Amino acid sequence: MGAGRVGTALATLLDERGHSVAVIDQNPDAFRKLPSTFSGRRVTGVGFDRDTLRQAGIEKAYAFAAVSNGDNSNIISARVVRETFNIDRVVARIYDPTRAEVYERLGIPTVATVRRTTEAVLNWMMPPDANQVWAHPTGSVSLVKSRPADSWWGIDFQTVEKLLGHRIAFVSRLGIVQEVKPGMVLQENDEIYVAISGQDIVPVRELLVKAPPTEV
Image (cartoon, rainbow, N blue to C red; front, side, top):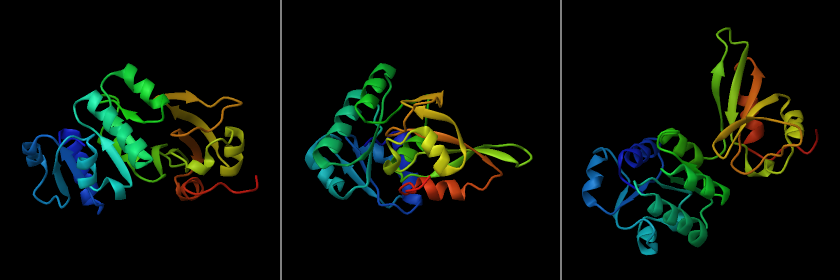
C-alpha cells in the first residue's frame, strides 16, 4: 500500500524478481511513478478498506507492506491485513519512533524512513535468509546476518550457538542492536549476527531457514 518513492521502488524490485505484486493507492496519478515494464496490478482505493484489499488479492498474498506517507493509514492497514486476513508477514512504515516501538511490541515490524529503506522492507516480506554483512579483507572471517525461521523462536542463544557451531555476536531486536548475553532467548523477528570463519554462508543459511536439528 502506497505508491510513493518507497512503495514504487519496492513494487518494482518484487516485480523484477518474478513475484506477483499489487499496488494500492488512493491517487490514481501515483501509479505513473511505476516503470512501463511493471506487470503487477494497480488498485485505486484506501489501503485498509477490505474490498480494496480483496481486489488487490490479499486473500492469496504471502506478504503485505504498508508504506504510504501516513502513520495512521499504515498501522490500520497492517492490523486489518494481519487480523482480518491472517497474513503473518506484514510490515508498516512509521515516521513516529514512539509509535513504531509500540507497534513492534504488538508484533507488527515497523520501518522508519531514515533508519531503514526499501531493502529493509523487502527483508521482512521475504522468507528467512542469511546474508554476509561484513568480511575481513583477507577473507578469513565474516559476519552473517540472518532472521531464523519461526521454529527457532524460544530457543536460548547458547543452544542456538551449539546448533550452528558458530558464535552469535549480536542480535537486532525491536530496531536495537545489542550484545547477546547469558539467558537471552531467540524471539520473533530477531535478526542475529553470526561470526564465521571464511566467507561460506551456505551452511548457516541452510540451518536457519528450516527447523533446528533435534540434537546439540
